[in-house]
Every structure is written in C-alpha cells, then in structure tokens.
Amino acid sequence: MTAVLARHRALRRVFGTYPTGVAVVAALVDGRPVGLAASSFVPVSLEPPLVSVCVAHTSTTWPVLRGVPRLGISVLGADQEAVGRQLGARVPDRFAGLQWSVSGSGAVSLDGAAARLECSVYQHVSAGDHDIVLFAIHDHEATEGAGALVFHGSTFRSLA
Image (cartoon, rainbow, N blue to C red; front, top):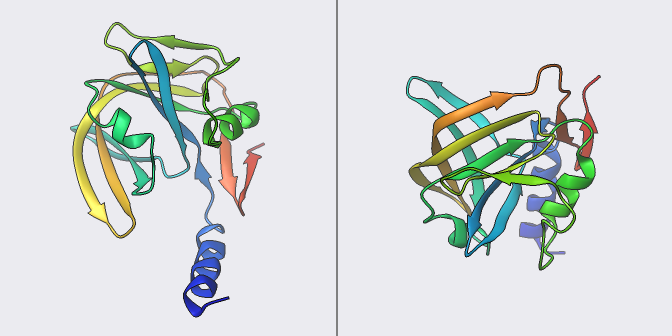
C-alpha cells in the first residue's frame, strides 16, 4: 500500500468518528427520478435559508442534477437504512421499489423521510476532491417525532 493510500484510510477513519445525517438529493430528469445519497448534509443559514451537501468530483450523478431548477433533499429517518444503501449504490435504477413524490417543479422527495426540502443550487465551492454545494431552501417540512438515520464509523446507525 502506498503512503498516500495509507494516509487516506487513516483520515477516513478520523472523519468516520463524527456522526452525520444521511440525505438524498434528487430531481425528476427526463421523466425519471435521479438522485444520490450524501452523508455530508449540513444546515448552513436561517437567513437566507441555506443547507449544504458535499459531492465528490467523481460523482456521475451530480453532473446530471446540477443544472435542474429545483431539487428535493430528503433527510432519511431511522427506519430508512435500506433506502440509504440503495441510493448510495452504483446501480442503474436507484429508485426501484422506493416510494417517492415529485413537486410541480420537479423536486423528488422520498416518502417516509424525517424531513423534506425543496431547493435550488445557490452556490458551488470547489474544495479539494469535492464540491461544497449550497442550496437555497424554497419549501420544507419535517415529520413530527421521526428518528434520525446517521452514518458513523462507516456504517448506518439510528439515534434512540
């Protein structure tokens, strides 16, 4: 193993000690839902209302989503681990068998999510091997009493 790979693995373990929520960014593209799972969802600002997600430069899904006018961000609930795994996989139809809805502007939201936001891209910031994508929030709702799905130590967990 090269020194760079060893350093990356060690840093990944360090990053893995910090639990993060799991969110899905999705929209309707050419009549079908397209989305990606992100464990880097972060609330940013109340005024203006902004959230952020980090997307790897190697993502093949983000270039498809980047130009759509509205995107849905679904914060996954504690019982949606299988959904997170499916949407994080590199499979042809990530939405197969999942229940979802679409807004009039094409933002896709997952049914059963702990929270759902309708957003547009506000700003991109290139940062190392990722882009930090800031999203302006246009609409939002939370499911009362929903538990959170988190990613910690390279595995999904739920908060009691």
